[in-house]
Length: 326
Image (tube, rainbow, N blue to C red; front, side, top):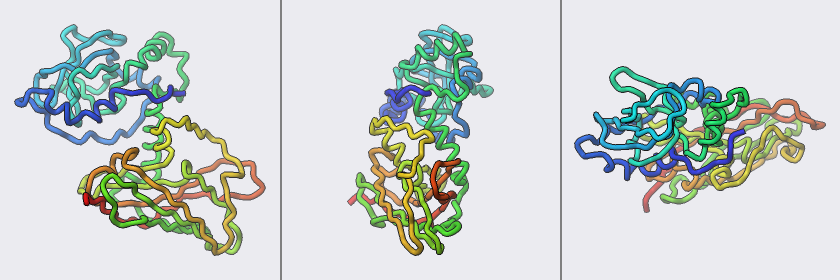
């Protein structure tokens, strides 16, 4: 299992983009590019195997060319790193000067050297002892071990994006499956910057027999949100991620019991109101319009119940919410 979340340098990189912009000389200000969404989350074993070099080092300026910077090594654990450091290219916002991290570098491009294009290229030095132990004895690494909790969440998000077609330009609505119908709507079509996005999920039993539906805000309800700006990637929001960010030790695993279900009589509705805070979901912070799609999903294996639970995925109709600075 991955260790509990700790302050990591990737969070520093994301939080200090504005400060990082003036860390480099003005003449060499890197061109800002959007980093591609990762297509894979690497386990600890994969991280160690794919990396050409693994070392502890700091971000140093100046760099040789626009979009580049130099990593000054302190301790090399795999591969060879020149004493004067490595010049690398960062895809996305510039790296903040002085940031210290464990660097896993694997992607190399002609004329550019190593490229930092994945969130798993850098880790907080708090993970150093585990990295050293894994390098010393790779046999002790489990096949599904990740180095940090954020990697586990990334792996899940990538899987969910693939399942729901989140990379497609438009997610096709599928509000009815079997005898269950989903409708989703925002409490208000216009919210204030800094305010919560409140969304109501309503499940309706269209059948003639009772339906046993799972009703866990952490497991079953998802919100796909995308900025109206052309080219903006969609993100999948889930209350489970907000709980992790609040510091709750939430590990649902595969534990399911009868208390997770409710019986929905024919023609009856089940309403669930969820609130998405911009504190936990940065995509909701800035003013502008967002396209919102609600998803209800129940993916279960065999469960010990005396009834057959509803299984499947429902996708509601998309709607637009304006985040206004008023």
